[in-house]
Image 1 (cartoon, helix red, strand yellow):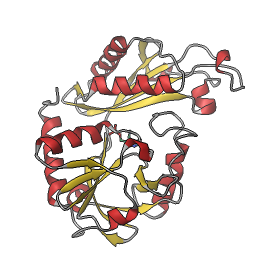
Image 2: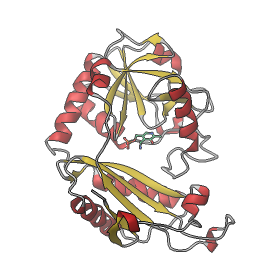
Image 3: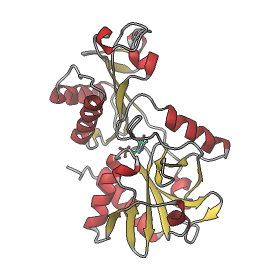
Image 4: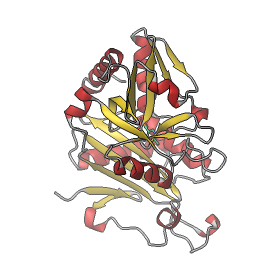
Length: 289
Ligand code: PMP
């Protein structure tokens, strides 16, 4: 079934969802986006995603042409028009069409694109067995060059690291920052468990502050686990009791090896399994509001 796409200010047929080849989103990766989950027809962490989108836009001096509440309605209209129960939304705002130069004053009409579709998930086996990771040699963008806190359309940094993961036969790859500290994976945040304490790199390690990361930290605190944002190196992962990733698509997924080294017992650990189960309860019951 062809999708209905929200483009500009209305829903159009998939075949009519076209934008200019002069759009700076295409020419330069000049724009911002969000990836959002729909559970049981409800948009997960909707306000938080819209807030992060507006923050990313502000950081690149892009004015989103719809107000946040209108944009939220547009997302909901797109979900409803495509009859999405459990699915995924890609919300994109480009700088709009301009000249072939970099000057943003020559662009006009930022484009809003909303796609709501089914989601392709990791097989359940990935959750029960855990995944393997390698460290990419491509480091995360230097925050003074392009802040990883901006969820921009320029994802080449992540794509280059992901290629290294794919070449090694893995579905994710670990990225270090310019100081050699652990930052995150190419599309997921990373956590470790050591002596009962849940630890994750802080925002200034050069990470995108994932909304799943935030939700999992909250669930962990509610469960009584100590939670710490702390700078870490690969040593901390190699010697951790447990390790897992969080992300909109992945949710909570155990990591059982890094660079061929077994982490902990080499299987999803008890805190990881508990947090995955709590996260699934939260999302499957619509209890996050
Ligand atoms: N880091 C990066 C680089 C990402 O692209 C994502 C996915 N958006 C995440 C972390 C996880 O963020 P979230 O939990 O909001 O999906």
